[in-house]
Image (cartoon, rainbow, N blue to C red; front, side, top):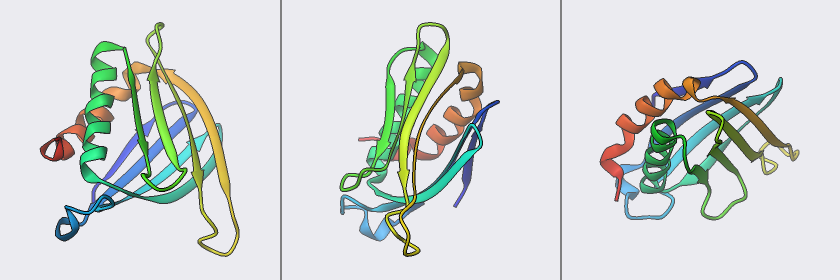
Length: 138
């Protein structure tokens, strides 16, 4: 699994995707490990997702960088965890989301976050993650 990192002044988003090729026809055929740090608040969890949905997210993220328009969201089909990137008119990217541990260690933890950063931080992350997943676009 390759780790992808988006690091800005006050926000970090890290993810690793594990594609379960033998389960590719099942709606939750991949595991996405996510870690968010927003203004020194940190949370991490795993999301059960469809790789084609994640590929679409990476495509949308690249489009946001190139056009400064639109949104890109990754969320679980059966859960409440999500991360959404939204282009703003001023050349900034607004990000918001919710990361929940769902009592994986016996206790429930949740981080609701929002942040904003200059779109120049998005370039390398968006291209790297898109190039890795574009073959799964439908």
